[in-house]
Image (tube, rainbow, N blue to C red; front, side, top):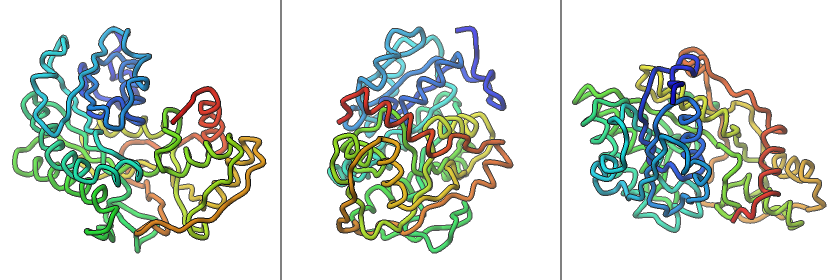
Length: 332
């Protein structure tokens, strides 16, 4: 491993990263990118939503270790016993159920991961003097009354609705991370990730892109919620990972939005997936979920200015890659 992570433009040198939730969708792509740039990686996952096959291609690579642990309980001993050559100098906190199908099925675990799990991940970083990066979400803005959403906006969140288990877990994780920096001077950062898609998503996880792709490839009707005029801003996973690593390598505390400011309605997305998949599927409109945001679009002025980051993969290109991956894998 002779290529350190400072080979990424603007990325500070890290030698050993711990990625919680590293066998999840975004986490597994992070693990790959870090290894590709010469960083040892300890992937920590309890596999409640992450999948071993997401990191199967990494298990024989030098410098990669997989630790099965629930971060709701202290996991320092598992990391120390994993055989890493040196203590961690970067902790990336990506453990959490993130899809509606998962966090509605595991509401209490979702809240505990955002609270106790974040606290334990912060403790690991503090013990080793490591940079800590907390993965938050655009759901911190709730159903926004500001559009596009900048980091200065405080959000419009229902604290007791069904989605609150995810929204408030992430908001509490942000508060805990910020308090850690104020109280202890720890080196922390917060990223707010907007809708990310790409290979390794699960077809039945409840999010729009994998649901539409799975349905289109199966020749089923695409289920569009409400009238389909609600918008999302979709970032291909490679772009998201570049933004995360740029934030990790900076000294910014955040929060910083990482997302694609190109908006698309759910109807437009469904029809684009049908076109790119070469499908004959139609649309079927179903009831819109409670507290479903009407609009979602990041203001990425801060990321552009401070991190020199912006997305480069178009929706057509990213969706083609995603559809190709789903064709090759039985993604459940």
